[in-house]
Structure formats: C-alpha cells, structure tokens
Image 1 (cartoon, rainbow over the protein chains, first blue to last red):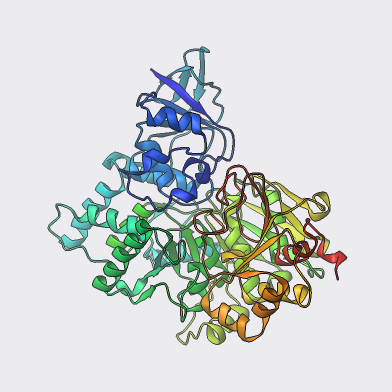
Image 2: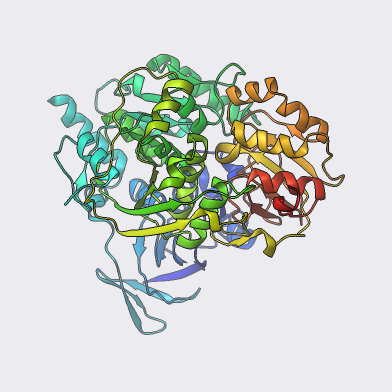
Amino acid sequence: MATVVYKVGDDVSTDAIYPGRFMATVLPSETPQFCFADDKTFNTALQQKAIAPGGIIVGGQNFGCGSSREQAASTIKGHGLVVIARGFARIFLQNSINLGLRTIICPALEAEVGDEIALMPAHVRNVTRSADFPIVPLPSARQAIIDAGGLIAYTRTRLVADRAK
Amino acid sequence: MGMTVAQKILARASGLASVNVGDVVEPAVDMAMSHENTALVINQFLEIFKGTGLEPRVWDPSKVAVIFDHRVPAESAKTATNQKKVREFAAAQGIGKFHDVRGDSGGICHQVMAEEGYDRPGAVIVGADSHTTSHGALGALAFGVGATEMASVWALGRAVNIQVPATIKVVLSGRLNPAVTPKDVILHLVGLLTAEGANFKVVEFHGDAIAAMPTSGRLVLCNMSVEAGATSGIVPADAETVRYLREEAGVSDPLELVQPDPDAAYDRVIELDVSTLGPQIACPHTVDNVKGVGAVAGTKVHQIVIGSCTNGRLDDLEEAARRLKGRKIAKDVRMLVFPASWKIYREAMQRGYLGDLMEAGAVIMNPGCGCCLGIHEGALGDGETALSTTNRNFHGRMGNPNSDVYLCSPAVAAASAMSGVITDPRKED
C-alpha cells in the first residue's frame, strides 16, 4: 500500500517538474533538491524528508510534456516516488524507463492526496475510495530495458555482445 | 500497404525492406546531436562502459555533433566547468562537429545543424533536445531523446527498441496573407491538435503552401511539432530542400529525397487552407491555448523577445527590422533579439537589420537559448508579461513562476514593441 503525496493536473511540463534555471545541475545525485522547485510547500516537504519514499504522484494527461531534460525524471526518482498518470509525454516516459523511475499509465485514475493506493498487475486500486482503475501497459518495445533495470545496464549488455562479434 | 516517410527512413536505417506501424526496430543513427547537457551524456556514457574492460569511445565521431547554446557564455562556474569537461571530451574523442563559444561559427544547435549541412533528407537524427523535431524540415526523421538514451546511441550507433510511429498527414493549401507567417500556421495547428494530440506520432507536411515555403518556414513548422507532442515533424524533401542544402549549407554529396508511397496509411489527415488564417497567439500557460490576435490585443507587455531556434532566422529579423526601422520601441518595453546563429547574426549585421533594431531600442544578444527557458539572461520580474517568438509559454518558463508568456510571430512581436501592448500587425501595414 502507498499514499498519494502529490497531485497535479493535465499537461504538467518538465519546466514545472524541474525548472530550467536549475539545469546547470545535471547529476542524478544532485537533482532531487529542485524537484517541483516552484511549489515551495511540496519542495520543502521533500527536502525535509517529510515525504516517505514509495509515495505516489498523481498526474493528469500528458505528464512531463515539453523539454527532454532528463533531470525531470531523475529528480523524482531521487525521492523514491512513483508517478501514476492518465498519460505521459513520450520523451518523459522514455527517460523514466531509461532511469528506472516507476511510471504507471492509468487513463481513468481518480485519486486525491492522502488516498491509499494498492498497485496491482493490471489495475490501480484506490483503497480509500474502494475503486479499481485499469492500467495501460508501458510500450512493449521498452520491456527489455525495464527488465534490465534501466538503459545503462541494458546498453552495457548490448555493447559487450556487439564487441564480441 | 505503402509506407510514410518515417516508415521508409526507419526501414532503410534498420536494414529492412519495409516496416509496419508498431514494429520494434533498431535504426542506425546518422547524426547524434547534444548541447550543454553533453555533460550528463558523458557521465552516463562512462557508466555504460564501467566494468566492461572496453575503452569508452563514441561509435563514430564523425556522426556526433556537440553545439553549445543553452548557457553561452557560461553564466556560472558550474556551467563553465561542465563546458570545459565537454570541450576536453570532444577533443579526446575526435569530435569535429564541435561548436564552442565563439563568434565565427555556431549558435543555436538546431539552426547550426541545418546551415552546416549536418541534416540530410532520409537521415535518422537524434538530439538530446526536444526541438530536434526541427530537422525534419530537411526531410530527415529527427527526434528528441534524453541524455541517457544519447549515451546509449554514442555507445551502440543505433537507437534501440524504437517503435515505428503512426503518422498524421497535414495538408496545407493556399497562400499566407500579409503579416501571417509559418509561426501562425503551427500555432494554429498546435491549438487544433492540442498539446498531446500528436504524442508518439509523426506529423508529415504536404500541400502547395509547403511547396511554396522556404526552408526557414519549414523549420518553424517542424520545430514546434513537438508542442503537439509529435515524435517528429517531416517535410518530404523536394526542390527547395536541395536548393537549401546545396546553396546555403554547401552540401555537395548525393541526396536521397525520400517520399511517402501514394498508398501510405495515415493515422489522420488534417487539411488547412492557410489563407483563412490571421496572426495567432498562444496564451499562458500552455502552447495549445491558441487564440486569434484580436482576442488578446491590448494586453500590456513588458518584454518582447525575437529569436530562438523557432524564429531567429534572417527572414524573421528582416521582418522585425522592416517594421521598426526609423521607429521607437515603447518606453516601458524592453526588447531582446537573439539571432539563431552567428552566421545569421553576421548577415543581419551586414544588411543593416541589427542597426535598425538597435536604433529602435532593441538589445541585440548573442545567439543562444537561455532567455527562452529562463536559464540565462532576460528573466521576467514578478507580475510581468512577455510577448515572445519562442516556442514555450509554460508556467515559469522565462525564469519566473509569477509571470506570463505569450507566443507569437516576429510580425506581431515587432508591431507590439512599438505600442507596448499586443497589437495586430495588419493594423500597421
């Protein structure tokens, strides 16, 4: 069981997740400090470790649209959070899979901050509201990367295989 | 069933006779471009090689382009140190297509790629920047990736696990009215499609309005296709593509003008008569919040921005200079001009456009992206409003969450600079 710790609407851009003015900071070890930096309340709670890892961010349609900045995925992953959204923008979803940030596509999801959520294989169960919402599988093309634990490990295996040829 | 341009390019690059939408392929990459975020790409690239015993070398240095544009010259010690690291890496790896901070070449990556002839029709181009869609203007399949995916391309020379995307066909007919530009066309289309209407899809542009449009305008259309979520925007290569690459980019090798099959299957077809359009404005805080200029005319603006990878080309600066020559920008408005490259800067200087703009009160900046995404110069104050020819107006985009950004064409920006409020440029003509 996990708790919804944050909720945003449709078309939340990577500028909102990780504002451009912090883009000089690139390393995944350093990006978590600027997570949703323009929302002082949420960012402060994250910085003070008032939000436990495993918590859920609920997003609307087109979560992560805009810039390809990978910091938007690493900053959320750095806090150990999971993103469940009605839909994701392509590059953000890809970056998340590449970095191992857990993302779940759940087009009809209804959930509010504080709701208790159980993640089932084919649906998301909102335990607080006693309602189930079906999951759309992540793109099957990406399964091998997910199984490898991310693109770095996946590419490393492929690279070694390539060079052995 | 026939293939779209995207299918044909992916089939060729993957060594296949044909591909279907949804197939998973691994296309060989013809060009891999990154900017300051190369610092992160290098970090991830070295991670990939850890424990393999292999020496970290990019697969083909001639197919890697690194172009500094996001924070030039460096705004902080951190950026300067990252740029230094990238500079040393480019030298060690023998990356010749490296454009450093200097006035005799370089500029904004998407413009430099086109004018240096790094873009070719039929090529697979990946860029660690979402506006990599721009390069479809020259008939390439070009898409944005994150830094880790770029590191993977550097290691393997191909993009792994790519799902062949469906294509939306956009047919543009008719002639643009005076003071109406390709920017107005793409803003209208993004409004029509919505910010996610082309997510995971390619937009392929056709029609007599495209045939009549120079490469500078096609770059605007493809550049902002990503604002509807598109993986790529593509203008199938034609005589204008050949003219641009031969005459302006100095390309002499053979060009493959990849065309869609007549029976290619499209996800959707959108037809638009561009002669019905007036100037368009994307209102805060999403790019698909598009209205005719009349709906927001009179809105007070504090900063005008002309330039960027979207609208910093010679014809954009010419349009602004023509309107502002001998006139003055309103007293309480500041206007910043960012030519898209140093080549454009130089030409605009020689033609007198920059002088005309300066005399009107504009500040001519060096080519760069910084202002557009709020990371380097041109930030807005609390409660201020910008009118900009850039490509995004997200909350906080121009460096301040307590400000508004409206997007428009250079014609609207120049007309509004004189009045200090959003102004229909047709009233000026």
